[in-house]
Length: 266
Length: 294
Figure 1 (cartoon, each protein chain N blue to C red):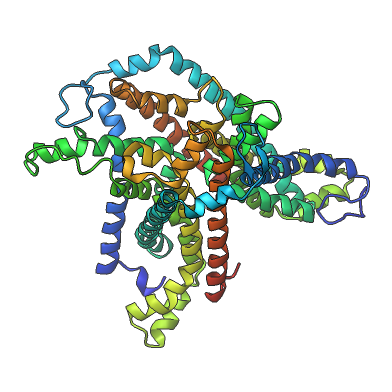
Figure 2 (cartoon, each protein chain N blue to C red; figure 1 turned 30 degrees about the vertical axis):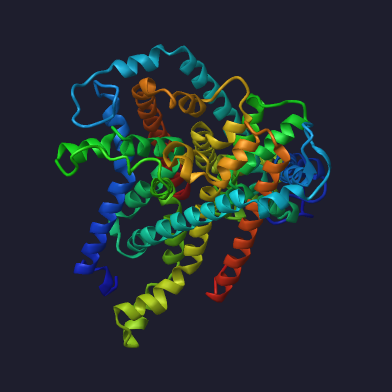
């Protein structure tokens, strides 16, 4: 295109900087899987021997298993609810041209501008007032809010890309509101819905700060990790667990990205 | 048939039930979970602590304590300084990456974009935990430095310092700033480069007068999305910061935990929100000056 796109020394320098930046981004986190195979309690060089013991400890830990179950249940429910809110708000905003839905979309994106700790305490007061108290439903409510901004954004940008003529044609052929939504718009948006759901699940699965305030007696996986950090002896097991979580996050984020791209290329 | 609402939209007549049903989940989330619960925090901040859920009697004492107690003032200033430094470091280090992504990434663009956003989707707690392993007394950095002979014995200087908090937070929120700056730069017409050079601008003048102003809306919103979570953070100070790094988030957490003074915790939270709102207003103002298109 322009002369600037040719590789000049300045561009090479820029690429070198980006390489260093990526190293800074990935190296510290990359140490976790590395030391999860280390045959010593201390995460330090030199690595003495390799072992799978810590992964065995992960598999055998009862408390961990129940935390995983809690995390999965909370994550799937919160993702489903956040996606439901995202789809309905974005649909009414884009196709319903409802000013009220526009207002909802604005409020739904507020959690980006509020520190997690404030969302946590606000919901803590709310659930106590409602008589529910810190519990699984409370964490789910918190994680719906955490996932809401992304869900609305993903669904809005998908709906905006659907040519108006398609639902129009369906209407002209006599399809009612529900039919247009269910048989026309939603099928066209399936990849985006899948992407919003997965990102909502990831947000919940990795979320710590909000859950910290809203958990009752059943911790989520990040809360379980937090409780283990006090014990130096369990750090290697935490690293093995963390490696598995990182791997799962990367797979899900990659799948969500692929779905999103496929949705755009239609 | 619904010609009334027309044109690819939801029909106005007959669809009243449909509209209500579609707006229900969002209304609950927005008005009950977000607005009402935030209103509860605001309400509680003006109540005295009598051990009950909504406190007793209206009072301004919580805010008086926040504003006058030297301990709280110091913690507030420290939080501002740490969050400010983290924001500055994050935005400045992210800018060249966003620039390369927007103009020079070529066919590697989508891969690179994925690589810089991926950490966003990995656990924040684990990113902080990684630094605890790196900086610990008998941790990765010390063992590497001692092993290579750079240090004769492990140093205590890495962990439990405010510097460790800044480093860890800057790493944890690094990817947050890239995307908004990239989006801003990506919307810049490439012809502006040619126009600038045709008008005799050198590389530096083009950067300062064309590219930098164009990126400003992205820089400002990037700064905001980094500042907001860092200023309220309590995990990082607690894991790598030590006692000299207590931030306002740690104080809020303590009020809802051990100290059990929810009204005071709410007042701290309201103060943080007031600060964030003030920043948003300033950012809007500056944004307008740069002729933002939003």
